[in-house]
Length: 198
Image: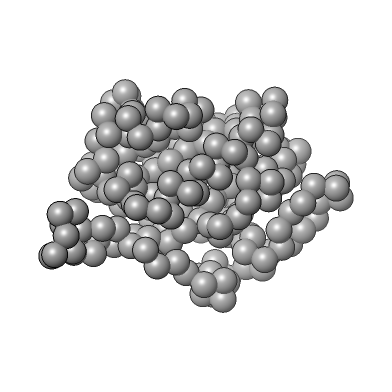
């Protein structure tokens, strides 16, 4: 899976990162991107039980959103592990966060598949839906993803997608993106800022 470089991210988002936290928390400067209001964060999907879930359902909490897929061999599992560990780092503050995993591969990521995949951490809310609904969710975060055929593999295809943790405030407005590869401590620090700011 390819990732977008920091310089490309800056062109994509047309915004610079900033560190206005006056606490002792470790907040990474490199790879944190402030998002414009063109990022709407709208989605209408279903969760692992098949229940309809929309962005409005999570208003009142800071949203942590990651786009991935369950057939990803290495990168997505690592980033999902970072999400889980960041929630542990937050302690009681994790109650203020809605951690969401949105599938970029809805054709394979059924609610049942997501239920099995996320059995290790019930706090993470996996979402999927129709191909059209998943695409609309991606576009609302300006998230890149495309199908790549694997003619010589039993997997048949994989998904090439950008690797970001998106942070949305309590109104559901995406405010920052953090490039994948961040540590749990770094991700937790950004989430603490978002919790304190709203």
